Length: 340
Image 1 (tube, rainbow, N blue to C red):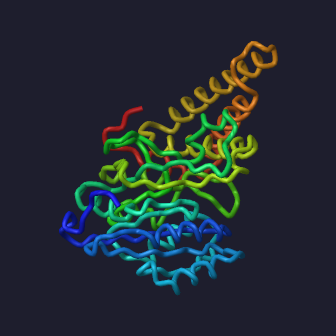
Image 2: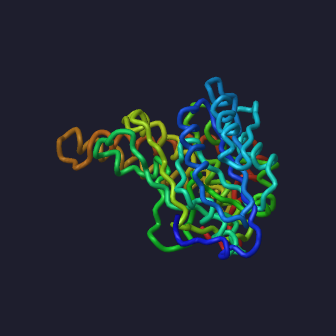
Image 3: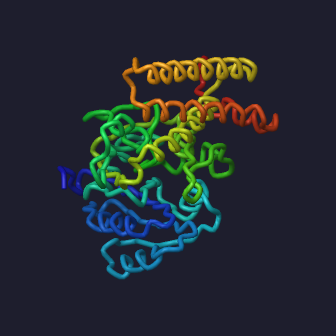
């Protein structure tokens, strides 16, 4: 454990770890084992809640095993029948009571002082609405060289060795202040979907962070909170990267729309124009590749095109929305001084 002693946390800090899971029992077992090894000062009150999102594997048995071991002081499990990560996270928020909520993915292995470091940071940063730590990719097998260029596709998060204020945070190990998420009204209305079963949908964690910022809270990166994010070999295949970047393209279009501070007409013109030019760039890259003149691999072109296609789908979704829904989404997370 690092240099954090109980006396460094003078007041009680309450933090609830919420693990949303869907048919990932083996990795959940590893995640809970790592949590059972946490070294936490007595001044930190912490709990762990596993949200069973319609699992049909051994999830319940895995959690029961850890409950019986009594190595995690306050571990419980609850079922959420509505499929999807947003519903599971909402269930976790509604069924915990700590001042801080940490979303820990079932494929994340926390360093043994993660909870202690999170509690220390939470106590020292009173204006913080959310923070995240260093997310290190833990490859099941060495990935192909081209995959290493797409760390963002696997929730890689490394902003250096110093505490800083980034523009956004990944969902793996995201810690949020309960008051901040309540102030955003997120528990009553979510605009962007996130993983639904095995569908690669992205955007829920981005929405949470952007809306917390728009509510006037700071977001932070704390490198002392370290975790390993396990990446199975099947996720290093080109097909996976194409699919996840298609989802990320839609996510970027929708999240940019949430930050917009101008008219809908201006948004339409800017979004269509920029995505058109991105499409032209991909076409040029593909043409160069076919003529043997480009310096990109076919996989790079396919992944980039998937991202652009996702943005086109996002534009189409916005154009087809009911006017009232679109008005609610457009600019819902803009900052007071935002300019486009």
